Image 1 (cartoon, each protein chain N blue to C red):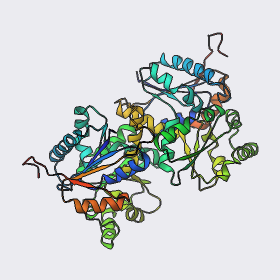
Image 2 (cartoon, chains in turn orange, cyan; image 1 turned 120 degrees about the horizontal axis):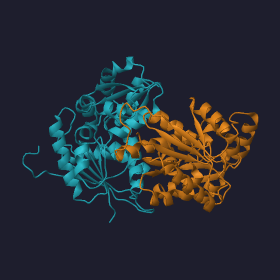
Image 3 (tube, chains in turn yellow, cyan; image 1 turned 90 degrees about the vertical axis):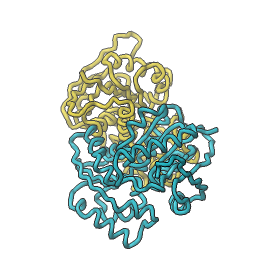
Image 4 (tube, each protein chain N blue to C red; image 1 turned 135 degrees about the horizontal axis):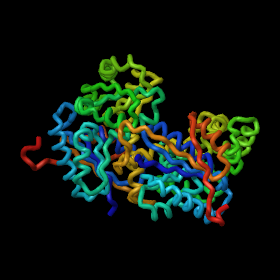
Length: 269
Length: 269
């Protein structure tokens, strides 16, 4: 049986990573877990998000995956290193790939980051950027109103445009030349964010960049799926599967089967 | 003492990788070796190129580097796996990074590759592309006239433009949407190649992409240089250092010291 890449997120955001994996690594099988019952993670405390992440990783490990992808910036910021230390397979987060792409892209050394409160509070992007390129100036802003829009499927409404304009008002005054979409939900809003920021600002999707690093690590570990493999993906979510399925099918542009997961541990929700 | 990234090439081509490492990883120390006495590698047989590559790797290992970068497509095609098998530090080639970038970039699944005779004959790009994304159509063409132009420092002359037009004549008829510059010398000619191919074709520089993969692998191995490190790079070449120094200083836009290396093994040149 083909070993899968296990991808987890607080909800539908990680589907942006899954879609890019399907595009850039069409032979790889994906097992996806969206914690829709407890989304959003952004406003939660670090300890709670870390606990949820460990729990989902344990759930996914039963499928014997070859790699774990924490496709949620908030969870990456608080739990990546811990998970990496305890799990015997490669574990990839979404923060460093985005940071590396920004370092490659920026010419004026001024980079913007938007994310959830949890991600911005953690300063994980500043650390990732500065560790590699200390000369870079980083301007960050939490945009707590954006994830709920995406989880409701509101990608291009008037209301969404208004919320995005409000959220980015201050950032637009700063002469950055690239903006990291530091939350895997944000690529759903790429069009609106791009219009609001203007053509001078390159948007960096951590989803696209993470898919590429998944490819790099699988190659270097000799774990790429062999030529001719036709994967059948699996999707799980902890909440009502109907909204998840509707958003996932629209975004991925294919029919999928979603299995709802009811947590049996009493202290979970 | 800071452990370096060792970069090797047949001549000045690998400087395109070195320059990108300096830009994307400004804290990393580089030790560069250009085998200018035996350039170009492209027309040589696989066995000979592999032997030269092993020899340079042995030379570089005396400096205790943390990583070896084979910044030459011809040498990567014939020697990467062998070197990787015998050296206890990470070894990065330039073919897979370019292939991955093309997979991320292409929308019409038709990718062009230009390189030396050795690289094109090895089918290394086709294999790297097809291993990951079998649906991609690959059109390759050897351009043996380009490396000598770069080694002579002729980047933008009328003659260069004429040679590039001749070399790419057939490829221009094919509706590819990206072209891999499958030789680290070619980024010196990016401007002319871009004009000849037209704006619809995205040029993929294996140099830029390789620097990014170096960053990815160093991060995942916990080998990134620590914040605040100010590197002093070292350059070696096997031929006359004057032309090498002149091209290197222009390309890197900084003053460097070049140490000529005289091979002591009699059967070398």
